Image 1 (cartoon, one colour):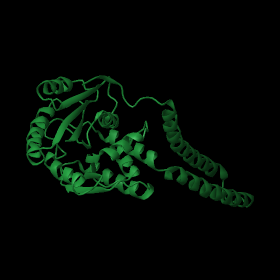
Image 2 (image 1 turned 60 degrees about the horizontal axis):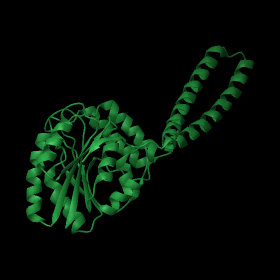
Image 3 (image 1 turned 135 degrees about the horizontal axis):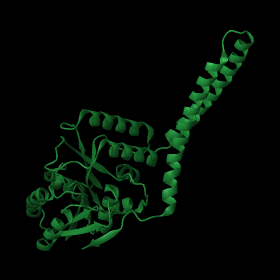
Image 4 (image 1 turned 90 degrees about the vertical axis):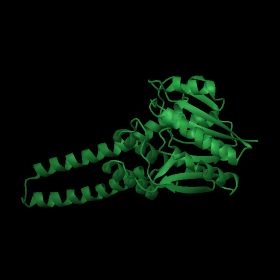
Length: 310
């Protein structure tokens, strides 16, 4: 018998969970009819929800032996929830998917066949459209993936979802990455392994509201860039070199013009000082981001604290 573990991160999703559970029950019934030799466990990770999310999960666990759960002591974020799900999974194959049904359960059988029959280490999904998303969000999302493609050696596929299935070997490899500041989409690419990509069109949430605001997504994007690229630091070096050269040329020209009484230097000097001061603050800000991440890593804090679990 093989075991399939399904990891479902949840944060304040009381409106969505009943829809998800009903849909997954239908999907898993079809799955078992085709693959009766595969046992299934569903691991709900309650990321410190403040609504009835945990009580609903417990009610399902009481009547469905496939349901397990991990509940955090507070909100640690989706990255920590994914890690906790992987860590508490026992399956030969591990699936992670969102509870809002934007990840179509109908793809589960095809994903399983990719790793169990076709020999892939992972089967991942990506959206080919962003229909239904706010235009400004879609615009910046596409710019982010293009930027990651250019400045990172790790592959981050445009439109990639967290919805994927992995072999136990790949799951353990992801767990071995003990980063405190995690960007799992980048970690998948960094650990390697053979991945099959499945495409689907964007699906809107079945209920409730997204927990990812524009600001949260921006911070998440910065986390990803800092975690898998040192290009911003290299850019600072180049900017510093170019500006040092230009400033030296400017000083020479300014001295010549001052001797010729061509212009009054005071406004120019003020402008130059303001410009170089702002560049310096910008450079220090980027460097401090890397330093702060290194500082948090050295603390060796746990990624999450479980208050209760099955």
